[in-house]
Image (tube, rainbow, N blue to C red; front, side, top):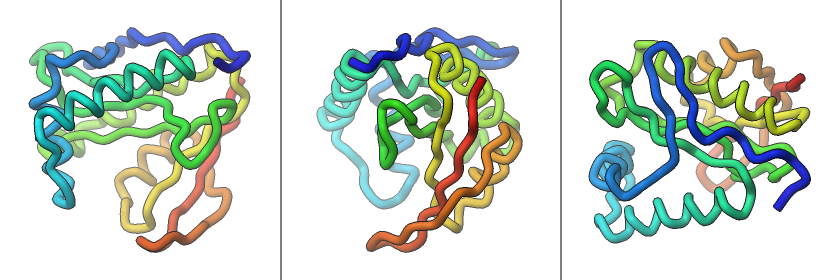
Length: 167
């Protein structure tokens, strides 16, 4: 466990509710993974992904959180903090939403709530890593104050690293 406060795990915005993972969203999470087009986990693998997320949260005090629209009550994706390519001291913000809800500002709204949650932990900086083709993610990160830092390359191409100072 880090020396930081755990992030708040129940976040609410005007239109969204973000709460901890549970198996009730397994089918929807599986559909979100399928929408990526590169791999569709089985329902059992999806439950393992959720269990892994829960264990990671217990170990690090940070989490991705399922996003539900307040009015409709439906699962539309997730947003939160991960170690990812960064560290538990300076984690990455991550989000993924169903394509059917893109363009409505939900990712920005959820990311702002997660940014506030990250600030509440006492951390001083966050990262985000984005593939060069992901224009929509760059727009979300710009809106919440992230700036490009550097570019690295892996076997799938370039990765743009962005950072945001907190406090």
